[in-house]
Length: 306
Image 1 (cartoon, one colour):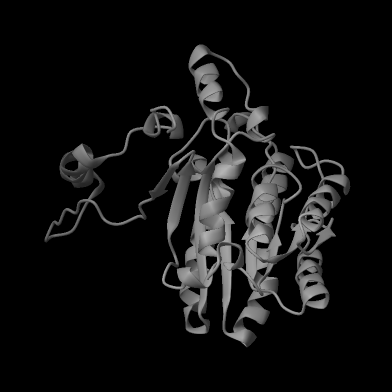
Image 2 (cartoon, rainbow, N blue to C red):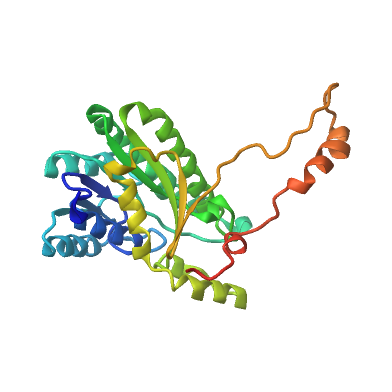
């Protein structure tokens, strides 16, 4: 396998590929031989408006380097549009092999001020959008008995963060979606994995800075470039990663982490059954040493990226 041929003959659909993480994924996949559908609605960070230019610029960059790519400006939140972008891959390049669910928006606000619109907009793009595109590709993957799916999660969902209940819930939902796809489609040689990327992008740039700790966190994140995410995504999309499925990774500059999944930590048993009072007196104290604190992503990943 030559370096540039890792994805030779493959067709990839990368959502949110006009800028940031998605752009670098599309470019690296194309450099490794994939033909790419570059999807990007071109909306603002909060999901408003549309602009085809970012997707077209990525397509031009790929073509100028000798690759093949087509632009798509539809919204992943639209079920029919998601099917249409998969069909565009098939009609343009003859097949679909890889889906990267990267498209996203942010509408951060403290929970007691969050509106239904804030919730729906973020969940529709991240969680519903990931389902829409994955579901559209699944029919083709099943028929050809092969396929790769990579979905973007976040440590805001895996660990926690302030002011991101909508985003965190959607991103943790994507982890469950990814695992379910991995289980349901293993018989068709389809893999599905999730990645939590640490990278400075225009979405991260919207984080409000209210104190010195947040300022230091933002400055630390500025050192983590979006291009650092693309190698793991590209590797997972290759034939060599057939054995990797149902996993959760994180990428932080030059660090790659395998993240844990929920498993029992402690158990308590009472032969005669439990009452609310005995739960308080016995169960909670027995388990308290294993309780998780109210930590945030920055509390766990507290060292400088390397």
